[in-house]
Amino acid sequence: MSEHTISVNKSVLTPFNLVAGVILLVGTVITVLRFTGGLAAVTNLTDDNPWGIWIGFDLLCGVALAAGGYVTSAAVYIFGLKRYHSAVRPAILTGFLGYALVVFALNYDVGRPWRLPYPFVVQQGTTSLLFEVGACVALYLTVLFIEFTPAALEWLGLKRARTLVVRLTMLLTIFGVVLSTLHQSSLGALYLIAPSKLHPLWYSGYIPVFFFVSSVIAGLSMVIFESSLSHHYFHHKMDETHLRENTGVTLGFGKAASLVLAGYFTIKVIGVSVANNWHYLTTGYGAWFLVEMLGFVALPCFLYAVGVRDKNITLIRWTSAWTVLGIVVNRLNISLIAFNWQLPSDQRYFPHWMEIMTSVFIVTIGILVFRFIVTRMPILYEHAEYK
Amino acid sequence: MEGGFFTLQDFMTFTKGITYILMIISLCAMVGFWLFLSERDTDQTVEEPRHHE
Image (cartoon, rainbow over all chains, first blue to last red):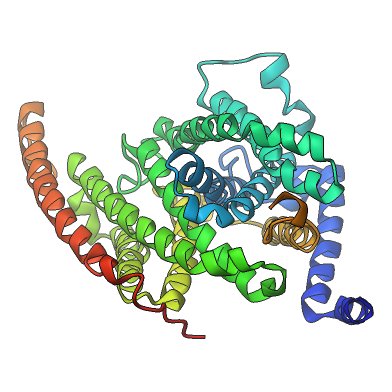
């Protein structure tokens, strides 16, 4: 115990902690500027470009990459793949933190954040896709919070409350899958209103389907990516079950990701074909579209398949990181790069450095909270009293 | 093909024709891909996974 205390004291001033501390300090200053000076003080957002990197990265990427929660719990509890059970809690935690940070980031992005609850109490606007997204995100964040609570309740020693919540697992899983299906696709559907603004190679009547299918890829890849990071940095926190099942989770999720990537590649090609957009492929945007499709969809699909065939865990882990990057590229393409593509470059939006710094600040908070929880609560191991 | 269509009928015939051909190719390719992905599944329990770290 004393050795443990010494090692904890020693590790406080690590390079990671110092960098995180600087980011938190700068982020706090920007936060003060944002809420005292308004959006104009820290962003390049205008009435012509009201959705910037906080929507493109924090929200679109955040929601997609938090899909591991519903993908894993559906696999384990609905499809009965119990051999992946050890991946559920880390995935739920990643999903919960992802959604919590999306809502946190929205407070920066929305001009008057105190009006965020308005859709529920003042004007429902039930024909609005944004209302549907808002309602689903709010409900799903609540579902993820309840799904996460057994770990916190075990940590706090509240057995009766924990037993009560565990009984709700199946109901919460079904509810989570329904809500995720709805809002993951609706985030894509938001762009259906802008066929003249979004480049034809990215715009499609099937864009809600593209968003949903790519969220499954993001969820599967994030579970592999997060488990490889946990394996590296929190190896000492993992119990035998987690260490034993880790390889199976990586191979199984890698195989699923490869198959879904193949399907995604197919429907994206069908999307180009249905709209007869082949001629755009020879343009500059077409080249960038091909980079996304071949480099970030077809390549990881092939690498996952080779990794699964050869049982090459390292290749699958690196491919998961590449795929996560691909999802980020896809969401940024749709929300920023291929958006307003016909405007001259001086009228295009480019994020202010303080916008980028705010996103880095929010991601850093997520990593620190994840570390805080994983080092204290039974996420990567089973609590001795509940085995 | 831009400007090559005079009626919606022309456009739909052309794009749907290409799309159906692509879908048939995709479905056949998907079977091949599934076989490529899972042909070594049977010896999963025999081989130890490789870690290159």
